[in-house]
Image (cartoon, rainbow, N blue to C red):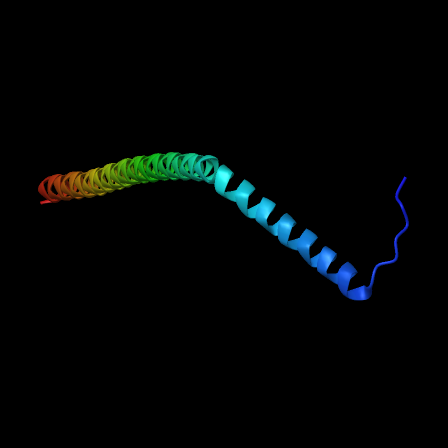
Length: 126
């Protein structure tokens, strides 16, 4: 148990100040002792951060490559669709031209047959 002693205010203040100084010195000593460990941890954190950035850059690069591949596939698909549409339109146009040609040929043949009948009738009458 403590022995009660009468101390003056200035003694108590100086004792408190000495205790604070002792704590501060102990803190500084502990900080200096931990400095190599802190530097090692900081270096390790920096390496982890660089590795994380490298992984992120690799993911971003892979994402850009995938996006470029998808865009190229889309362009190829669109080109194939456009080519097919053009081929289909050309085929329809050729079919329409052939139908028109057949109709014109049929009309010309009917006209020729009509003219032939008319000429034969004129021969018989005349």
